Every structure is written in C-alpha cells, then in structure tokens.
Image 1 (tube, rainbow, N blue to C red):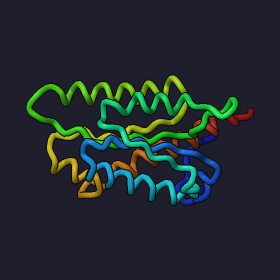
Image 2: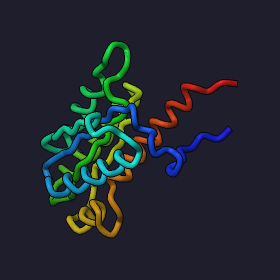
Image 3: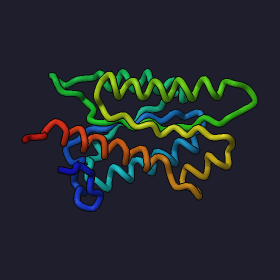
Length: 167
C-alpha cells in the first residue's frame, strides 16, 4: 500500500486541526510574506482560522525554544497543536554569526519534531543576500512559507496514516 498526501482530494484535511506558526521577525517584511503564504496554504486545506495561532519570536535563534514550548503543551493527554510551522530569515553577513544561528535554528526545530512527534516544519530562509531572500519569499523561487506549511501538512497526514495501519 502507498501512503501519499493527495493535494487535490484533501481540501478539508485540517478542519479539526490546530496549528501554531512561529515567525522570526528580525526581517519583518520577509516574515510577513512567508506568513501570508503559510496562512493561505492552511486555508486551502480547511483549517478554521481560530485554530491557527501566530507567535512572533525576535529572531531565528529563538524559534526552537518557542517551538519546544508549544509542542509540549497538552489538552488532557493530547497535544494542543497538531503541527507547527517555523518561518523567518537569516542572511549571511561578514561574520560567522550566520553559521551559528542557522545551524542552531535548524537543529533545534528538528529536535522538536523528534522529541515531541509533532510535525514541525523548517521554513526559515538561510540565504547569502537579500536578493535570494526576496526570491524565496514570494519572488522568482516561490514562497518557502507555502512549502514549509505543505511539508507540515503532509507529515501530519503521514503520521496519521502510520498510526492507523492495519494488516
């Protein structure tokens, strides 16, 4: 049997889901573009707007801690959030600061997924310059906010499929 999310047949997939979006607002205009695409993508799959909470972190480095806190929240024995999308941008500068921030943000977001088994998507742009960043926030390379949100949705689907397998 094959398990793959069918984008055209699942317009109501998120109808009962609750999602958190974390936006690093160091580059607020970029974060806003990524956020808009993420919200539009969630809308396509039937989420109730009241079930989407948006949190603003000061920068990319702070995103994993907030993601961890949100992933650990429970209502009874169930996770409060079914999925988390992380968004933001880190642009390479003249110092190695870029490498530290990118590495720790990516590692931290991945750790949240592994530790809490909540699909947590990495939509933080790690680019060499502003042109590349703009290109990935709705420009010539698409919008990584949409891509990260789709990754979270597809992983949520696959996790549900994995949990419901019967032979």
